[in-house]
Amino acid sequence: MDQIIVTGNGALSGQIPIAGAKNACLTLMPATLLSDEPLTLTNAPRLSDIQTMTTLLQSLGAEVTSLQDGQVIAMSSHDLNNHVAHYDIVRKMRASILVLGPMLARDGHAVVSLPGGCAIGARPVDLHLKALEAMGAELELKEGYVHAKAPGGLKGGVVEFPFVSVGATENALMAATLAKGTTVLKNAAKEPEIIDLAHCLQKMGAQIDGEGTDTITIQGVDRLHGATHPVVTDRIELGTYMLAPAIAGGEVELLGGRRDLLEAFCQKLEEAGVQITETDKGLKVARNGNGVRAVDVTTEPFPGFPTDLQAQMMALLCTADGVSVLEETIFENRFMHAPELMRMGAKIDVHGGTATVTGVPQLKGAPVMATDLRASVSLILAGLAAEGQTVVSRVYHLDRGYEHVVRKLEGVGAKIERVREQ
Ligand code: EPZ
Image (cartoon, rainbow, N blue to C red; front, top):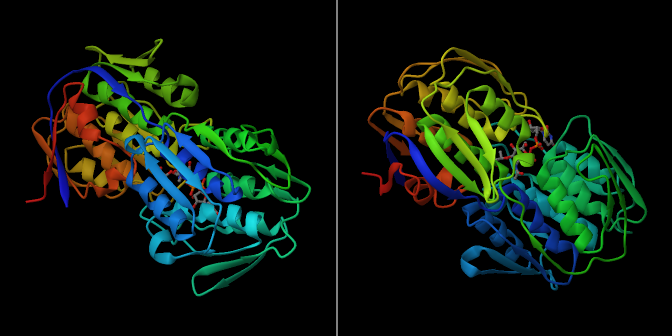
């Protein structure tokens, strides 16, 4: 397994290009199952999760071709010859559950392995299943698989989510586009990735209103046609790299960055003493000489502070003047980066969903272990500000969600390399 070695090297300077959003692409790709005409995605990120989704769709009989070094994904689901999403693929990536709604809506039957949990939590899919049942689906759980049927096709219904779920909103939204009649999703997720999915579906001929609000109304249509759609900018990659100059000092321009994707996060960064300026190429982020101020953070569904940036923000707050309190309200086990940061000299006290971080003047490089996707990159960020060398192992977690991390950070002056584990 590879390791990434980071050596604290002072202030950063330069530009980092931001890729298309992993979490948009992972829901846009299954949308190809809704139509027998080609769906092409541009601005796609080059990530192992995208490869996993490609393998899954191909296992169902879809044609998925990666062009222009992975930036374009050309798909066609003209001939689906298998309606079973197998455990050996689904267990690698939870987002695989997103083939259930489209497959059921298009052909009236689907068998999808339950994804199982992951490092950050149990992550059940009960809301996905309840939403499809509200549209008339007959579901049976057998030997770890969901057997779904909709013999006469799905019917429009009212889906009231008890709490916000990004994936359940996406599954229901896609299924509803081909259901007979009107579907209303209440307490729907409002993330930019949901809006991007809705825009792509509208290009395919879907009748959708209210995307980006907590009530989405879908008028089912008989069929959807093909489309070409650019994947929206990755707000989590953007926020992650905004934290690089914040933690190491200096000034970096994030190409393609959009503040509207991350307003709550930007406000917290500015509260902590980081300057953010909108430019014609994206966002410029600087911290020149002034210290980092402690701030309190509570993760919430969009437009609140994103849970996917909590680990990265914690790395910054480990170096702040004062005490910061981080509340993780979305996942039950998303502080696994804390013990690793403590190996670097951070002072963090975790109780349940609350982490209290007492800033220290200087982090020290150390061997640390990546435990999940966002935790892995928070350790790299900490390494940028640490004295000496930080060796991050199990970096396969990183490859799921960050393309060319070493090249992007090297490009702004970081001392970072990727090596085979000794
Ligand atoms: C999406 O996961 C993202 N993944 C996650 O990003 C992100 O952290 C999360 O949304 C929240 O923003 C993708 O888009 C592929 P949820 P998802 O359904 O859809 C519980 C990353 O790092 N829940 O909004 O799975 C669930 O356990 C990943 O890129 C149920 O109980 O998240 C969680 O506690 C990590 N039953 C909460 O709701 C359900 O049926 C929110 O989950 C569904 C969810």
